[in-house]
Image (tube, rainbow, N blue to C red; front, side):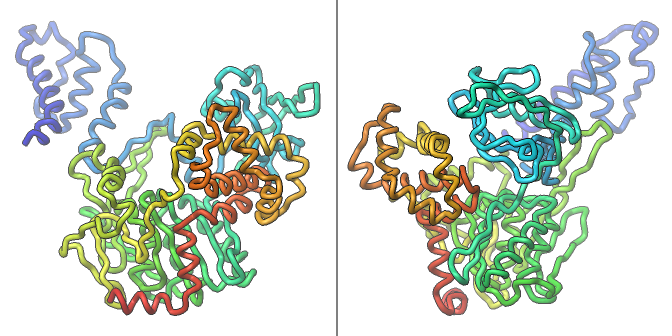
Length: 543
């Protein structure tokens, strides 16, 4: 009862104010022209209130501002994923999903109050002019951006802009006394969805997908073709941390693995008839085994992918229970450039599961669910999760799966805390691994540029006693060497250092093959991929 009062109280107060104005005002019609056209029979109460405020309120107020502020409050009474996108935010949202933006083509990091170029995008405007990794950006147009506590958002707003427009950038390069001035014509800079694809071993390929955007399927197909060309017989698809995106992109991706007529997903809503999506048997990976990695931040389209593979008994899902977003949004644009992203349907996996988690306790509790899972021990033990019998479904072969809140993996892998120590915690709090890796890269770029593979980086850095170098660096930052902490956390720290340094030079194909060595979920997936008849054994056990 209190919950309903809290929801409707603001509306009741607003209506009471309007009624009070009408009943309490004893002026004649001639004395209050603002109400001459008002009729109590108007059916749209919200627009009526806006008109009354605009025409009769004691002070001057912009009705457009009033509407902009009111819309988000109105939508709070719906589901957590129905949102209003203001016109000022639309460009950023559109860029993220379309997969490109106007810019100069560099990846940068703010280190010691200095904007430093981490990487230069191949074929982009900056590379064509000769800007290099390690360069410092000290000015943009007439704005000095060095040594003033500059923020990422500020730098992005200065460097990004419409394709074809010009921006002047001042560069400080190591070994050169003079500043370098560049006039850069902004171009289309891609935002990639496939973070990396590489061969783990002679028969196992790995693909990590960060989002489902406009070009994700094309990128995914390129990654699969690359791995197929290298002899991949097994594919591990990493969807951990992937928040989802376009429905049709994930449908096309799942189609690469399913046989003709197999159900991928269906959607249905109060005002939308059921829409069913099935495979057409034209996929490139119909003969390959597949393992999907998920975690508590895998949502929406990620869950569609994992659910389709699991419900069709096509492959194995490894990790932890996914987020639990089973709602479909459509974006309705307005003439001022804003848009409403409205939930219009729920999606259902092939077994009939709607894996949307409850949201009846409000938006805050909805997003606190991840924290509640951690507190309840779900990240450490699969049996801490209790599913009601009413949420029980069966896969194509008759295995039991559950709906009601995320995809539960076939193989549960707990969050790994075995390498944590007080020493490691202090290092993480100050982000020292990242800062050390950046400084080391910057000072040794000439030697590091000769290395071409992750294996070469790992071997080279081990020969340089990189962990010992790091402990000396940490001590200068106020964290003294702790042998007990190093005994517990040394492997994690050293692996992260090597991975970050490799990323600084050769990108994600340097980072991921190294970080794999401390990635318990991926290591479990690799172990499963090497086991014979794993899927058949799983089917026999869980049927």
